[in-house]
Image (tube, rainbow, N blue to C red):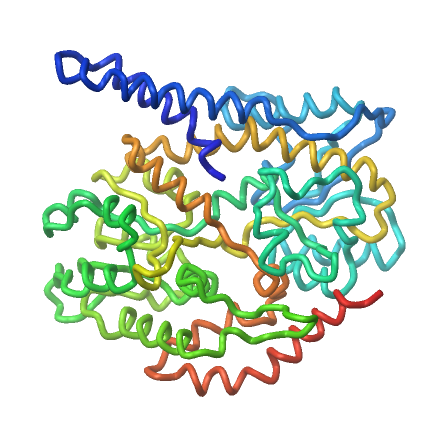
Length: 484
């Protein structure tokens, strides 16, 4: 999927390299370079020509009213052109859609995720048609969806979920049940890209430790949890000489007990939580592989000299350790590549989350639950306008906004070569979202997973102590989907 976004970047790299090249060796490679340029140009052209199938419509100057997380208002709105390329691309996208459909994309109401939930509940309970689209945090919107506050996206016209601006796992992987989907993601949500989990590493220090060719390791399918553990277990230096592990020392791997991060490991290992089969909840988490995953994560977190896990369960602690240059590897959301690491002293590389083993066919990644999903309040009446605008805005974002965003995200020391672009293709092209995650609602398995690895061999007991409550919760959500 993400090849569409990197085509222009690769083309630029190829053109720059061809301008800088000279000599017989370069002449010998001229045919290969030309073929690659032609391929990338064709991909970019195909992307630019791909369009939505929304017909000609005129909404008589109606306002498109939205609520959005205050931290991610740019998913839907910017007030004016500022000279910033991403801001101005979003502004231009909105103006094109406004002119095409004779609508006004109104300045949204911006609240935190709890505030959005409260406002939606108040609006719906009062029977008000105040807002057309909710762009809110995944966990909270999942809880509100299961409580009946949102419309079924399949009842909204003009949406084509087979188009590439919708993640394929939205339709697959049981995100759709009984022909219903109440929360949805598209390329309208920049936050769904920027909060994708990856692994970064310090290229300079890696070379000092004799760690080379990690991109080849990924290509060969050998970037696994065992490989990560092997490379980091002996990397430790008591920098301040106080005889104890603290943030001032140097580590092979710094991580956290954040629930979504732990989920990233599970889903990265192709081990999901719940599957809906024959209209029944199947707890596929309960198997020997999950127990083995917990054992390996426990070992990585607590038995490896090279791993540091700050007591703070948020992400900030581990990011600080990397930013200060005190760790070789670290999980990170892509948004922090450019917001925190632009001034990082060394070159660094970006890798996908590791696979479980080399037999696993694909690398998988997830987006943090803080990212936005799209929902339509049940009191919204302008469903034709909502469907037309969401489809058209998503298509425009796919073609214009996301390529610019990725260019900014990649325009750091992490991506001064073609290989980093290739890694980003893998990370962004294999993002997974499913029923259990989309509708976790702060009550499902996601934020229980950290407890599974805090103690050695704890999977069986932790699972057993939560199984009844989890079965009841997911069954309640499923029953809502199965209602006529």
